[in-house]
Length: 65
Image 1: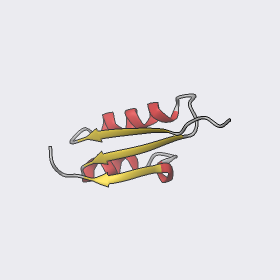
Image 2 (image 1 turned 45 degrees about the vertical axis):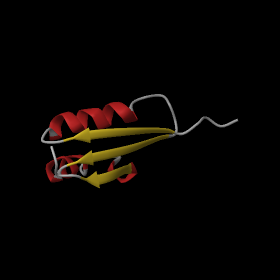
Image 3 (image 1 turned 90 degrees about the vertical axis):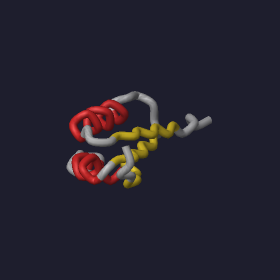
Image 4 (image 1 turned 120 degrees about the vertical axis):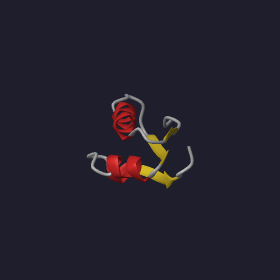
């Protein structure tokens, strides 16, 4: 029997450094498979685009606070 899929949704506004730390933390967990969805402003989405696993992150742009 396969493990259930885990979805983690992180919402961030104006905190790109902390957003990158949160994304790294999610991918360092032992649970697999994991889906990471990040809802953030332009600054946050730009920050996570340089992470080594950026292609595995689903991104949603939201400029509201």
